[in-house]
Length: 347
Image (cartoon, rainbow, N blue to C red; front, side, top):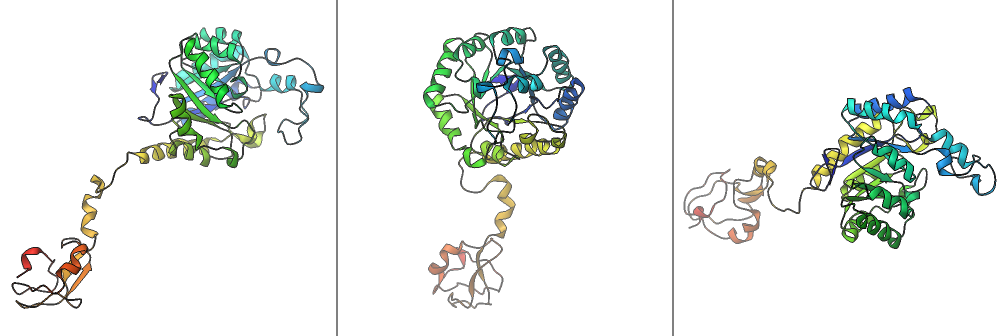
């Protein structure tokens, strides 16, 4: 799998994606500054979202269209007003994509309807993201898959059967490269509901790449996901949480993103393969293992005992596993204190 020239898979370092979402707070200059900061933090890609308030919902401020959940970060808002504030205007897309290209990072988007896909195709985006709230929107998935480009599909709220439907529809419509992103659609999400042990199971079940779209606070859960095989990590990104915004509460700042980029690479590098024995990097350390040494001067015919034979450092003598075998055996010549035990000392 390849996104914008960046290879994706367990044989490659994880792709780190900064999600702009609504953190631009209605300012194109702010959006472009976020692109610059994301690139400076070392991310591989930046993602935006392509929709309008009218394409998402109805302009109503009561009933089903009002967010009354007191635990929601958007409590007291209508869906329409929320999407109106958070959306990235269509006429900003070109400037954002051009800034990403200038900064050398991949740019792509999440479309929320068929028109958005057609709009994004004009920019020749390298892939598409399907949001968790759209993973049951099979007509949209079919439309995106028909472009033949890779799909990153968030799994929040989806059952195994629903994910199976989504993956089948995508593959039947012509998408060969699918990555499922383990996601908990709560904002912010608690680590105890992340269930990231699903990552390797999902890879085996659907035979595709698997990553994470992580809404927890901080970077710990994301790093744990990389340890479990996540080949993509997406995090919401902001310049400064204190400036507020619809997504600021669960977004990370530039210093945190840099840490995520650096540490996810170290985690991935540490995975390696199933291996025992001496690593190349350990060759020179072998001399500091314990081995058997003569600790008192011995005359020819003296026998090894606890008083003249010990397992100490360095490691030039016989292995300590031969200690009991040597006890009671006589030496065939004079041996000085500090001599490593060897088979040729035996009479």
